[in-house]
Length: 302
Image 1: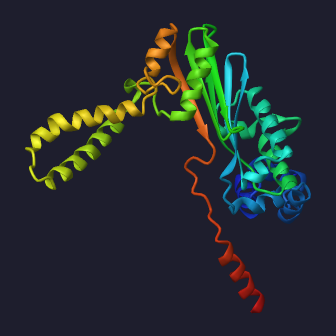
Image 2 (image 1 turned 90 degrees about the vertical axis):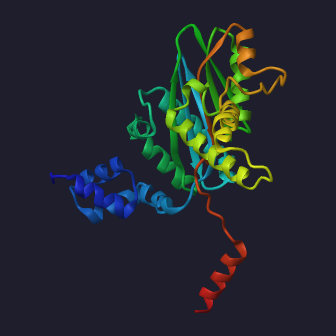
Image 3 (image 1 turned 180 degrees about the vertical axis):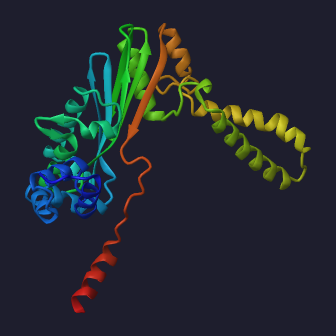
């Protein structure tokens, strides 16, 4: 039996873009023969899926699975929205959710290493990618937990384009669902101002001050800079921070009250929340169809 080193696994992964665990299995199965290992991966359909690794997968769906006092939220990406509506993709996202929820995984890396029926979740996804014909990837995994006195409020928008889950103290499922719906619509970043990191507040204050000073410099009647810093900036800062905090936002179902007033009125409180939206932060690939056709035509002539 050949000694399978980390360097061998790394080189095979770089050549095939298959998963680390799959590369190791391929090398073990072929007694360390690199070329046979490549063939092994291709035969399993793993290298075929990996060829799509350079393509941007910014579509897909988010989902959640509640299992007792645990809720798993995750994002499964595809290349196109069309495939995200495919029955095989829908079945895959349900399978992925159940596998993660039944495990102790708390993040994406741990989730991909979870084994189910003799395969890692990473392998399950890559095999599905080969069958479906698009690059599919598990991008984000978040786990929320609650106590027996708390309740999950979950909301799924547009079949999973946006998913939000709130943990509410107080056993009121209606309130929890309302708060989750609000989170999906208004996209708050924090529960309250107390949760905002000091460096975020400092940066926001810096930006507001620079903008206020620039406005003041262009004003017909400029104010003293100390007035800008001591009176105008704090007011604008407070307004901006309230807009990104869940409790201080105007409640989407009743603009006459804040979320905090609504929750308190129901004798409940917000513990935490998570909101996922498909493709957040991914730079999507924009295809110029006309340019693509022209390029293909030029290539055909050469």
